[in-house]
Image 1 (cartoon, rainbow, N blue to C red):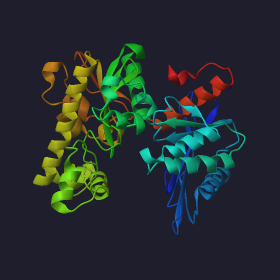
Image 2 (image 1 turned 135 degrees about the horizontal axis):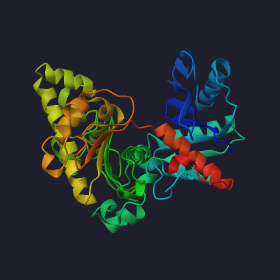
Image 3 (image 1 turned 180 degrees about the vertical axis):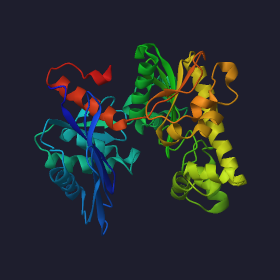
Length: 410
């Protein structure tokens, strides 16, 4: 297989399809885009070739099959040519349950399994299965590979993944810590080792994926040993609209005192909590602006947000035993010097120091924001989940064809 082999990465939601065409070996992006408002009266297709201006079209997109037609039409009209070197289609899949511990070549059994895992991720897995089926019809001659967000955490130690709940819950209903954002944590921890110039197997990292959804992960030599999200993406860090850690007795209490049922409590913990509940807005940039303007609710929201991050850093330092690096990533982690500084403030005695000038400086690629002589490197490492999905997809296809794994996995 040629070094310039191309992979089309698809991220299918219930009403959208994000896509990117890239060369996994080099990481070169050839085009990207978004089909949104699927099933609504007026959809929109945005296509961005790497070497041309973005193109936008408003049109009705009835279902995912039409969305795939819109993707191929955008490539045909605006380029580049999709049939030039395309070897596989990689799909982001949120939940692999206990079955999928690695990227997997999609067949009918795999699709049935993704469907069956719907109760674990009702907002995501059904849309993924629908999108994969539509893509298979549109690209029938290509291998399709599912890359699961949960897979990176699949081999967490039992003491980290096991909840102290009845055995029947664990064995019959699969109740344990699954973890999410695994594709991002895998990519960022690997890039961290590359930036430090050390073998991946020798580096212990705490990855802080701070976006609208947020999670922390302790990575020991390339293996996830703990992560802040759990059975669902709700627990752990404070997020844009998710609460993060709360007392699990809350639903029963609110049922007694407020007449709320479990579905209502769950919905509000996921969509009406987090920064939105504390500050009135879910975007951390606006929270920061309001805090600087003297809004006490926004100031408290920042305090709670950064405190929760700091607590997880300390906990994962203890879990790892030796910590080489802390890497911030995703929208907030990559772009908020204030959050980075405040989240690590007070940890200097642990060897965790942030250089104010380096932290404030902007940069497009990975960069160190701690002093050169600090015992623990603090980095900003932009995530690239699509690149990671493409590289894992190419590895699966090469393994199927008897070739060597892609260089992106080293």
